[in-house]
Amino acid sequence: MIERLAIIGVGLIGGSLARALRAAGAVNEVVGCGRALPNLERAVEIGVIDRFDQDPAAAVAGADLVFIAVPLGAIRAVFTAIKDRLRADAIVTDGGSVKGSVVADALAAFGRIPPRLVPGHPIAGTEHSGVDASFATLYRQRRVILTPLPETDPEALARVDWMWRTCGAEVSRMSVAHHDEVLAATSHLPHMLAYGLVDALARMDETDEIFRYAAGGFRDFTRIASSSPVMWRDICMANREALSAMLARFSIELTDLSQAIRLGDGNTLLEVFERAKAARDRYVEVASPKDSPSSDADKRK
Amino acid sequence: MIERLAIIGVGLIGGSLARALRAAGAVNEVVGCGRALPNLERAVEIGVIDRFDQDPAAAVAGADLVFIAVPLGAIRAVFTAIKDRLRADAIVTDGGSVKGSVVADALAAFGRIPPRLVPGHPIAGTEHSGVDASFATLYRQRRVILTPLPETDPEALARVDWMWRTCGAEVSRMSVAHHDEVLAATSHLPHMLAYGLVDALARMDETDEIFRYAAGGFRDFTRIASSSPVMWRDICMANREALSAMLARFSIELTDLSQAIRLGDGNTLLEVFERAKAARDRYVEVASPKDSPSSDADKRK
Image 1 (cartoon, each protein chain N blue to C red):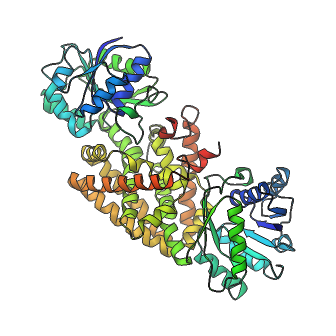
Image 2 (cartoon, helix red, strand yellow):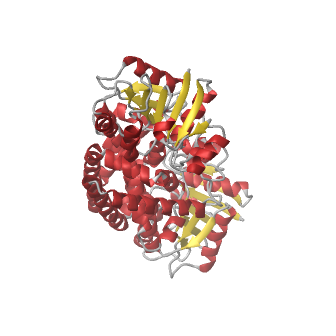
């Protein structure tokens, strides 16, 4: 049981955690914190949080568990604001999509790695944001990666592990660097391609006509380009190195593909497409017993 | 009413046309033709076609309407096979994703543009193939582009227009070159990015682990990489010029994005992401009154 949960950033991620823990009867009181007052008022109105304080230091007072779900660019300031107001035994965890930057932020703010800080990342989300987009089942059968450090207190780690399992998630552990590489490949790079594609089309003449003839495949392909621009700017800045390496790798792939098309090299094209289809079909097969074939966004409907 | 419809290529596209026309009571007899005997037998068994002949010349005999739905690389051979066996008043149309190559194939096979050839392209599909993947509502509220030529008989054009409207589609007209540019942007380029991304990941070490941590967004983004490799090889070969131009355009976009990430240029990133999100949100808004928010694939379930 969590006595008092402080959620810094009551949006899709933070709001869904509160809803899931409430639904499981695993939390007594939820205190919210955020910059947008209407969103916090709305969060109280729909019962996601019990009360709020816009000052992070006040919001974490007396909390036994603090969950930080603000954009990555705002995490260091939150650490700095709360460091002297945390209960001595308070556990702090976060939902940031990049872990290296969160650890660096903690080091800068606390002067060391706090033993009761458990860096984490729920691999879940939709392209929507704000507390109204949150729902209790967001984390069900989703993966959560925790990236404990040598300094991390095993009891704090076990408690965060329990928290996520209570929400229905599958928890695994990974090193900080490995997490950031895996996510650059499976999430950050695809977002860059989707944003880049839509932007390239948006900058063409006759944009309206082009989008008019886009079919369902295009909608699926570009759904992630409707995600929060600020969040994604922060992710790019925070995971510069791993993402740059993945972009370079993809760029070589695209150059090879472009050349095969220009030269009319059907064999190379067929080889690439067959390898990709086999990998995706195998992946979907692996994933489908647990995950729905439809997107997160569809699932909410 | 179509008296005898010949469908060359009884897969998702050809099978769905037959089903839709049957459902509308707009066709009397459907004759199928294809290379895979089990697929044709299956098509008869489930009532998509009445009978079949594996020889295209025999299959089109006596047909008043011929629909060609084979991969683009096989179209010229079909034209050549049927040209001397078509009824004098038979209308021929196709479902090829590239129109310039179909027109070139017709010119090569017939020695001129046949007035009763109406090049067409239904913008619909799923990542599945074969007659079992076909369904009667595939074309409902989908766009079909017809690309008539100066030589095209207006009565033949009107008849193909009517055929697609009978299936519930919205029909529009475009020049051959413009069609191929628009589709390169909205369909062919996205497929290259999806295939390229999955292939790049499939070639990395720890591929299994990488795919394991991919979330719903990745599944949507890569769904089109499960499409038919042969079909897509043919599309790339057939639309080389327009697709190469789009790839070059995207490549510049990606280079700019990569540089902004490497330099930590948050303002540029935010600008790109905001422009892309605005374009996509506007596009989805425009499209949503008619189209479902879920993908073609989801829709079938």
